[in-house]
Image (cartoon, rainbow, N blue to C red; front, top):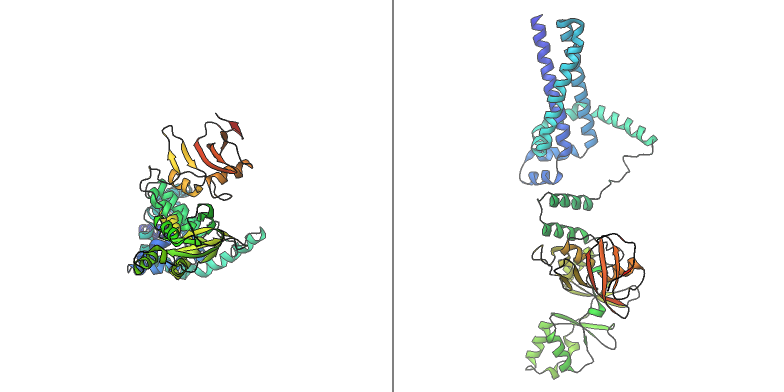
Length: 431
C-alpha cells in the first residue's frame, strides 16, 4: 500500500510539473515579441528560429498546449482523488478538491504564467523543445478542435480566416511607441520621429508643401543683373524661375551653378543667361504620398519638385528637406518653441501665424489638433467655424481658445491660442 501511494504521488507530481510547462509555454509563446525573436535569431540564437516557426501557427500551438494542459490536470485530479479516497475514505474527495485546486492554481497557473510574462522571450526559448513535442503529439487533435471552433463561429458570422486584424502594423507600432513614451522609456523627440516616419504613407505632398504665395521665385524676364541679385540674396540654394506669370515655372537654378557661371564671365551678371543655367523643373501631383515622393527624390537624386493640382496648375513646391523634417523635426529642446511663426507668451498663450502647419504645432507643443480637414492653423479655424472670422472674434473648440488677432482680406494671418477655460459652442467677441 505504501509503495502504491508513493508511486501515485510521484505520478501526480510529474503531472503537476507538466501542467506547469503547458501553462507557462502557452503564456510565453503568446506574449513573445516577434521583433526581439528576430534580433535573437540574427545574433545566432538557434531556438529563436524554432519559436518563430511555432508561433506562425499560433492557433494550432495554443490548441495543442490547452489540450495537453487539460489532460494532465484532469488526470492529476483523478489520481489525487483516488489516492485520498484510499487514505481518508469519502472525505478524501473534499481533501483532493481543496488540495488540487490550491496546487494547480499556484504551481500550474499563477507561478508559470507570472514567470513567462516577466521574461517571455527567455521562457519561450527555454520551453521551445517542449512546445514542439506538444505540437507533434496533440497537433492533429488541435487542428480538429480548431475546425470545430471555426464552424461554430461561422454560425454567428465570424470568419477567423478572413477577418482582418483590428490594428495595422503601423498602428500597432505607433501604439507601442506611445505607450513606451508614457512609461518614460522613449523621449518625446524619438516618439515624434517614429511617428513622422509612420505618417509618410498617410500624408501627401500638399500637406507639407510651400504654397505658391510663400514660394521664393524669380522672374526670368527681368534684367540679368536683377535676376542674379535676387538669387544671391535668397537664403535657399535652389530657386524656381518663371516667365509671364508665377504659375509658369520654366526652370530651377542651383546656387552653385550660378556661382560657377559668374566665375566663367568674370563676375559680370549682365553676361549671364539664366535659362542656360537653369535645369528643367520636375512637376509632381499634389496627391503624391510623402513616402512615394521621398523614394522618388532618392531615386532621381533630386532635392526639389514643383507641386501641381489635377488641372496642372502650380500649387507650390516641396523639397527633400521638407520630408526629412517630417521625420526628424526641427526641435532642439522639447520645452522650447522654435517653429517659425510661433511665439510663446508669458501668460501661457501662444501667438501663431495663420500659415503655420497644424502638424508642426502638434509636434512642438504636444497638442492633438486634428489635421484631416485642414493643413494650417488658419484653415482649421475657417473649417470649424464655416466662415472667415473678423478680427477679435474668438472661438472655442478642441480644448483651445482661438482668438483672431489679424486678418488681411480673406486670410487669417495671426491667431492667439490659449487653453479653454470653459467649453462654449461658438462665437464670442474679445476686445
